[in-house]
Length: 184
Image (tube, helix red, strand yellow):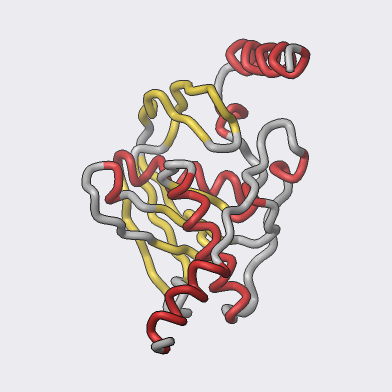
């Protein structure tokens, strides 16, 4: 068997779709620990996170959403407006500044299935992080990319978007979830 074909088969064999944790799993409330070392294991986690995000048609995913207590987020902003994949990995991301405010319309989350709501967010953010090659990067974002970054970094801080909506809307969602579990 040619080595290239073996590598492709091996790649698909080791790729794993991870279980996405959903509300009210208490793991989602954890504050994630910083990544100290970017090694093969960490790169494998990132690959599996990407496979999971694309499988469930998300635009972003935080490691805590798949039960990994590390400060890693991935996102693919390009897939919202094209067929081309442009996966971005941020390790130990931090929002260093915000400006303005606006309401993100119809925000949703893989960890809060079957629910969308308007969420008040900063209009623009500046984020610093490390990429998967270990290089420092800075991102200035607005609009949808700003929402994605804030949403995913919130996950790393143990905050689900439903904590940023009105208590009444949150209670409606919680009651709906309890009712759905009873009916299962």
